Length: 262
Image 1 (cartoon, helix red, strand yellow):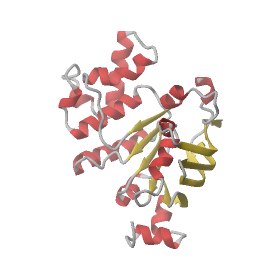
Image 2: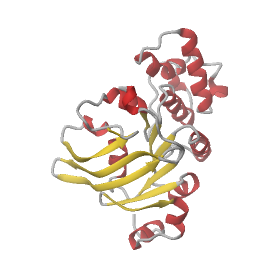
Image 3: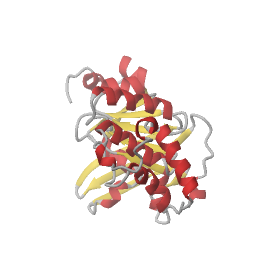
Image 4: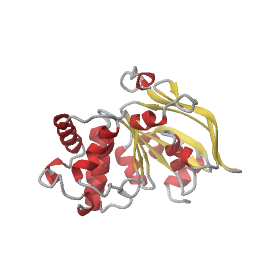
């Protein structure tokens, strides 16, 4: 299946295209006719009030919503020009290509090393030397290696919340994705840990495409290249971030970013 997601894009071409995408939870329509092209090696932020569909949309990109029995979709999402909702799609391979970091850090109850090695082992990597190298590289890329290199075989539960979130990111990086989804990844973190994770996202976009849901508009303004404003299940505006914040096209966008609602 990996060949289906051949990485043919050049810098800043669209890595994800969304066409007439709609989603229902039973009778409730959570997403309405979403059309977006998301560019490679960018940080794209999704903003909007609670319940507007931004997290539902994020989870649609690696088919996490498939786990909810009542979900029904129309339209499609293309990754590397391949439709991800076709029946023949290997969802395990899709989630390897499109990793996810959640709101609350969720390290596995095992050692730091085993957390990072977990994914590669599941995908068949057994060689200890290769695993050692991959664990170190992933932890370095998550800016965590220097803090944990002397305690790799101790429990991941014993490190701080900020370190746990970077460990989860290292776990995602270890399976070598092309896209990283982040659902409010700093909302449970202190300001220093938040700043470290933001710096990391800006650095990582050189190698990965990052999509982040955030309630923090200052964060969106600081780290993202493009921003989509969601309201009532629709994308109301999608623009370069500076343009959206400095010169929004729509009144609803302006009202939201100025704090008049949400």
